[in-house]
Amino acid sequence: MSYVLWALLAMACYSFAFLFMKIAMQDLPTFTVMPIAVGTLAVGATTVAALFGEWSVPSVTTRPVGFALAAGLCLAGAVVGYFRALSTGPVSVVVPIFGMFLVGGALLGIVVLGEAVTAKKALGIALGAAGVVLLAT
Image 1 (tube, rainbow, N blue to C red):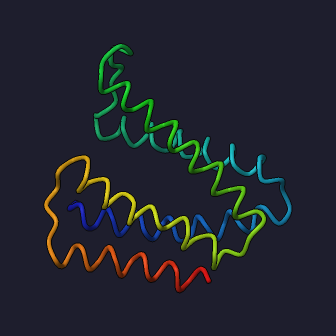
Image 2 (image 1 turned 45 degrees about the vertical axis):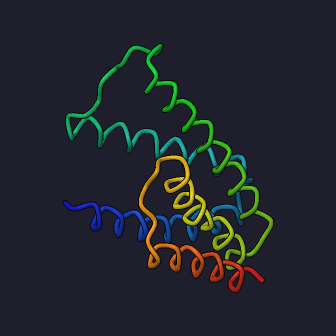
């Protein structure tokens, strides 16, 4: 499956995840829903890795494992912040602000990883940021 189809699958699943989280938090505390959802994610991700034959146990002292751990810490911060914001704010505001990670990720790819920037990509980043501001205000 191409990366575009994977991205579309991710977008669809994320869209429904926001909805299901908000509904769950109507009757359960935020920090009860979060470990249930994240635990399900961990089991699902491990299962998919095993099914694709990509599960391995690397040495914990390698540089890639350090970056994987750093990514995990960032994801933990994102999930905690997102769940807390969603439990107290409207989905129509929280999700666009959270979605600003797309702009941030694109900018980091350009600045840190040296990915090419084109006029079309720069316009997309600017319009994405503008869209978030319009949706969230």
